[in-house]
Length: 320
Ligand code: AHG
Ligand code: MN
Ligand code: MN
Ligand code: MN
Image (cartoon, rainbow, N blue to C red; front, side):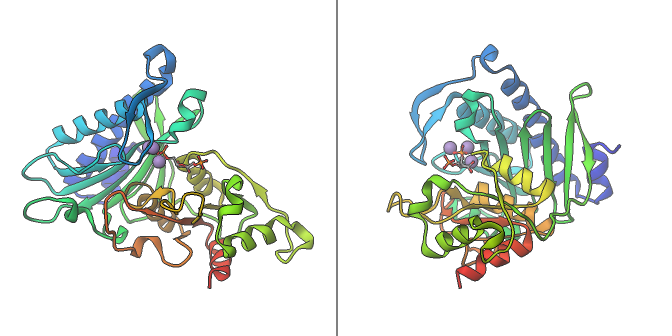
């Protein structure tokens, strides 16, 4: 079985990007150790700080953010980073080929119940000259790498450098990621969906109708029975979609008029959209392909509908 280093070499990933991916992978191994020790490491519970998203930070949101920040600042090839937990971009050095966007800990509400969490990352080319928020506002198509690490029963890394999506499993004995699934392919059809159903009354009419018709099962317009899953961590739900197909959505809603979307474009939607597209699936807001969005701000939020290509296409028909 190939190690991460061997798999990157086989895909002819340039040295500087390989080095950065190794930094991200090694930091995630340290994060997985903190997550695994849980209460023993004193990492559970909440701080009294609110992040720029208006969320109360969990201790582990802060710890994982600091671990990634320190590692990327020391990496030498990162110009700047943007994080869910940082108000503004953080400059890492005067030179370097890359900008890194990340969600250090996705699924924070799962931490204290020992359930699924992960880290999501997106790598963009660093433009020449001075770095500002503007430098990050590149469409998802510009990503040179994207991935997540899932701290589950096994720690797994999903990675793309634009040549397909691969899954690696952490070998705890060797502290090394090993390629366990090459050329991940999401089945085009599915009978499984993931949505927070408690928001149903707040969705737009097209999503209300799509889910309603899907819930009607065999005798309804869709003519088949669907099953539902919701992990409440995008990493977990997208991982299931990569493994066996499905449609995952966090659609537009009017629960809070100032916040019609939940997921963040730069460090949640874009990296996941690249992983999904590279595995043969699709990712859209309902009205636009996610990877084609020209970002307006680093903390911008978007609606997300992603997964099995035919099912996403069906959902998009309702939005026409
Ligand atoms: P984060 O923990 O990084 O703030 O992200 C949480 C997101 C995402 O992971 C998940 O899909 C969604 O929030 C869960 O939302 P609900 O609370 O509506 O289930
Ligand atoms: Mn959060
Ligand atoms: Mn998240
Ligand atoms: Mn997070």
